[in-house]
Image 1 (cartoon, helix red, strand yellow):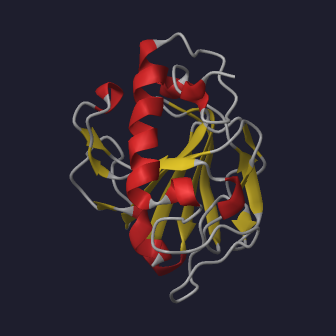
Image 2 (image 1 turned 90 degrees about the vertical axis):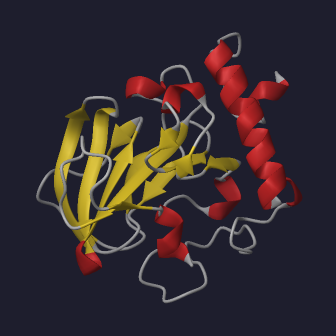
Length: 193
C-alpha cells in the first residue's frame, strides 16, 4: 500500500494531485492531532454519531471512519485555486454518509463538479448542506430525513476523480446561488462545536 493513501483505497496514486492532496492531508492530520486519534475540536473518535455542543448537528461520517480532513477556507491544494468552499472528510469508498440534522432533500442527482449522486438538504435553522462526490445517493428530492439517517456513501465522483475518496460538505445559511462563493457560505465545523 502506498503511503500517499493513508490506509484509504487509492486507484490513482501516481497522479500528482493525489500525491499533493495526500501530503497536505498528512499535515492537517498532524496539526489537528488526528494522527494520535483526536478529531478536530477535541472529540475522541468513536462509532457514535454525536459531538459536543447543542446536539442539533452531527458529523456526517462516523468519527472512527474518518481518516483525515481538508478544512474550509484558504487552501494551498492546487485544485482549490486558493480557496476551499467546504469541509472534506476522508474515508473509504462506500463509507456511510449520514444527514447532519433533520431536513428535507431539495435536490438529489447530478451537479456540475460534485457528480451524479450529489445531495442537497434544507436542514433546521435555515442551514442548507450540499454533500458532494458521493458514490451513491439513498434519497430523492422531496424526501424528509432525520438526523443520523444514512443518505449516501462516500466516493470521489465529479471533479474529485483525481483525489482519494472523501465527502465534500458545503453549508450556507439560507438558500444561495452555489456558483457565488461569497454569499452565505460558512465553515461546517461551526455546526459541530
